[in-house]
Image 1 (cartoon, rainbow, N blue to C red):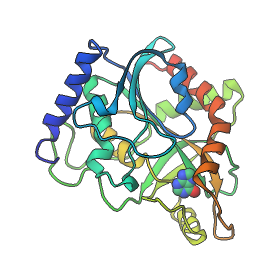
Image 2: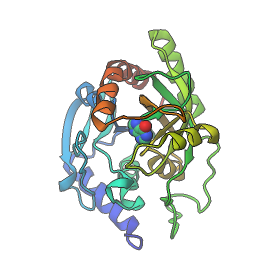
Image 3: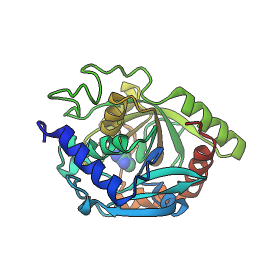
Length: 277
Ligand code: HPA
């Protein structure tokens, strides 16, 4: 993939421009667990299966389907990924992050990412929504390893504001106005696919994390490499710690995420309405 990365991004994005009549989305959204139904708030204009897009990987996990939805939310043009690619599925980091690069080439100005996570902050409860303030990259492979394409971004990107302060302030303001409670914290990205052992949840806490999950960090790194501001949202679907015997399952994660979903959905719709691009 390495040598032809730029060519591939161009071919993918040109294909999408063609089949969407140059729709030119302003906002990219990665619909993780807890935000999938936001797709229903999109006034859909085009839907493109990942399998039709040149060089796009295809999603394999239960509960995630694979298509790009183009349309309007609150009058703004969005493109949403229904289904994302996880490192634990066996995709390379270049594949995991490829769609973010394509969305940038389509013209997005902001990226909104969501996920499900295990909470390690003792103040957290199942189905809490956590605004991601920062992350810790604990993946064993870095998406920017290898040849750097200056056309995408610098060799050594700075990460002082991985999650835009301005976007976080706006989101908090909206949550406040809507009377929806919001946690804020640090998301630790680990490769999975095992959930953590009690000792590992304990480690995440000691390291400075509030929640742990298996996605998001690679996509955010690649977005920041290209200078895209990011809003990150996480639904806490289970709680872990050194003294908690964790028996969480994928089904429980999906169920806890779906409880938070109506709230998260509402906040994101209002956020998109209010965001200045
Ligand atoms: N750990 C890692 N990933 C997760 C978790 C967790 O506890 N919950 C949801 N995704």
